[in-house]
Image (cartoon, rainbow, N blue to C red):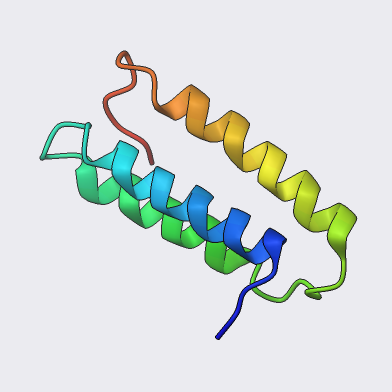
Length: 77
């Protein structure tokens, strides 16, 4: 299956989120993974052709990833 550019961007962001979760303490790693999964699943209903909404969510996700990647953040709820 061939993915569009936006679909590849979404998958890349998801992989980055999971990679960053591996840098967190083992005791809280599952919280970060569950949070990422929940955030992506929350927006599954979006129309694939709603490019502006998807691009907005990608930017929002990147900002969240940068914030949660901070070494000072040890847990997420």
